[in-house]
Image 1 (cartoon, rainbow, N blue to C red):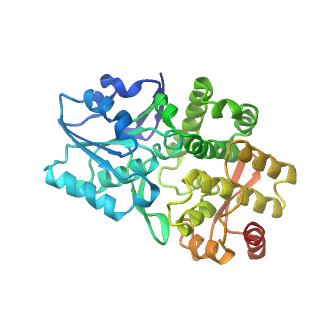
Image 2 (image 1 turned 120 degrees about the vertical axis):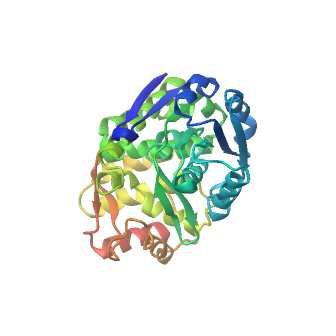
Length: 359
């Protein structure tokens, strides 16, 4: 077991990484406020891990809710169902919510915790690689809107994040690859040595090698924790964590949040950002091909959905959270390991990239 800390003053919290942690009541107990605990999970995760968590909480007043599984359910209807459950059970301000699942569960439960009685504590128990390396850390919570992903949400930091690496053994290859996309992101934006390590060891990750997975989770969380500590509310540096996300969110919205996994859309978005960086004269073609090759080896897509047009991209990208004064801001790469947030790019370069990927 290893522990990292997200340093946010009196709101600091640990990220605990190891195998078999869901069974350890002693890990959860210090972060539970009061006697009421609500565990929210989904229909895929519940049969696998809900009993492990609830057994360790049997001395508490316990309520459980099982949500449908899928990005398409990260919406106001699901959020309302959580509020209904909390009110029907007369949950108080001292209730602790526990999010047991992947990024969708973590985001919507975190948002519910931020809103219920103006804020109650919550704990993240992420069960996918993507959630363990990214979405469970940092306090960004939200639901999707048909016009844009994560457009309605709040910053609300968890009391702790407990990443049980044992849960990754139940992921299928597609879910694993989606998480690897976010791991690759950290190498691209701030750690060229980590990117090179991934080039050397990607097959170990795909074989679910325990040591390789624990290493990338800890490295990814270390990067995320440092960035969040420096820029909790995305005023500057934290925006760089969105490499590929503006393009990727457009793909998710255009496909109704039910065809592409988040990491798959981000993978294509990162290649689009790398290609645009090359056309800006920053990256060379060799670097772009390194990005493409690593994504392909990870089993990730590198082309956009069929029938998605340049105008589809623009219509969704213009409602991205990083739009400022009507200008789409994009995370681009000066080189592998060096990212920048820019709105100072020629429009014809963006148009060229969109045309290249959608023809």
